[in-house]
Length: 428
Ligand code: ADP
Image 1 (cartoon, rainbow, N blue to C red):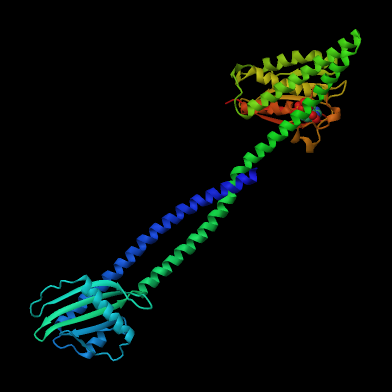
Image 2: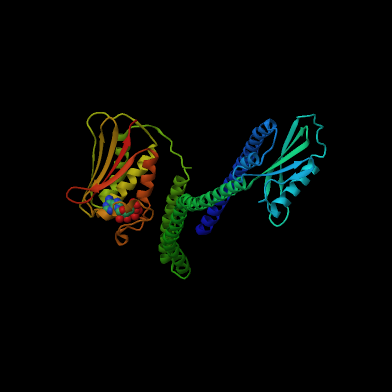
């Protein structure tokens, strides 16, 4: 499912960004081309202005002057003296002749009304036109008409727009090549970006699936006991039935505790659980838990002791119920994983910045490679040694509560064997 979403998201992301990029580059290409065309036409007009003022000064138009004006083939010139073409250039090809015919036609068609010129007046106009025939080429054209004492003298100058169009074509090619490269870069970027974006969601989904699978697995055992007890009690004697009912009740309680734990973790995940902080004295909290667990420790033949600092410890802001829950989880584990005759020590240290609560036992201990894993959901280091009431959620709940108080939980080995859990709460 995530792969499909990833592909779609990457495609959408690359598509939208590429479309925006394409529209923007088309816009800037259009502006740039319009600027190029306008600059090129202005430059042609300027050249023509110079040429016309030069022409005005010429009393006799010589072949040399016309050849010089042609500027090595940059301009094509056609002269009409009193309506008769002035053949100065024998090199003129048929193609060129046709080109001038088209240009004159276009001129007469576009500028039908020529101004009436008085003697020695010169008038000129610039325009663009496209050649007809096999190849359609675009040209700038300038027609100058001057009135001389010998009659009307007209010069047509053509300049091919090919260099400009070549420049525009190269520019377009460059723009689209850059767009293509940008499209590839954007596609790669979207692919990686969307993958990174989806990774936490995918991991979360994986964790949730694992959580559901483990929870279902944990619930299946008590449920199977309840169902088998219920079916057996139907044919059992009165005495056996009360035994089965007891089992059903204890398994029901186990299930209810597991469901409570799971709900608590779910609420911690979506940050909807409540931490009601009040100023609480840490030594009082520790003593409360110590007193509550003393009978259980005695039942398991364990020595439970508590160590408190001599000087008074200030109250700190916490949810006392939740802190009691943390200490209860740690103590319950210490009692469960310490063999008979063992020792469990509860202690409290305070150094003005941090409050340090410790639960140390001399039980079976935790191997180094397991120390990180024990905080994962439903993780139990040695399932065969876990009691029935252990689902592998205790430390996970404890660490969620501690993190909600901006604290830390650490696990280390007790000197001489066993495990020590240390909880640190910042005071500020
Ligand atoms: P559980 O409910 O199974 O105890 P926890 O999350 O509280 O789950 O603990 C996870 C695992 O960490 C336990 O299954 C156990 O293997 C190990 N563990 C926790 N506390 C201790 C301890 N005091 N001594 C040894 N092992 C411990």
